Image (tube, rainbow, N blue to C red; front, side):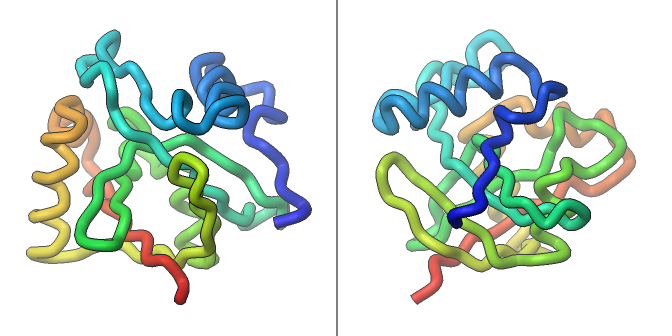
Length: 154
C-alpha cells in the first residue's frame, strides 16, 4: 500500500483519532490498546488499523477501530457513534472490500464483508461485550449499524 495516506492527513479528524494513529505507528503494542473509559468503554480496548481505498479519491486511508476475534477472523463495527450515516471507511469497503489490516505489528491484506442475519446478531453481542456503548449507539440511529467481518487473504 505504497500510496497510503494516513487519516491523520485529514484535518477534520478528531484529535483523539490523530493521537491514536500516531501512538499505533510509534509503538504498535501500546497503540493497540485504547482507553475507552472516558466514553463508557474499558481501559484496554483492543484496536486494529483498517486501510480502505477511498471510493471517490482512490487514496488509501487508515483508521483505528475496535475489534473482536471470531476464530481467525476479525470483527469491527461501523457505528460512527450512532450517527445517522455510515462512516466513510464503511462506504469505502462497501465499494471495494479489499482492505489492509494491522493488528499490533501483524500487517496483512483482507477481504471485508458485512455480516447478516444470525451471524450479525451473534457478532453484535460479542462486540457489545467488548465495547458496551454499542447498544446505545444503535438506539440513537434508525440505520442498522453494520458489523463487518475481515478475513485474511490466504
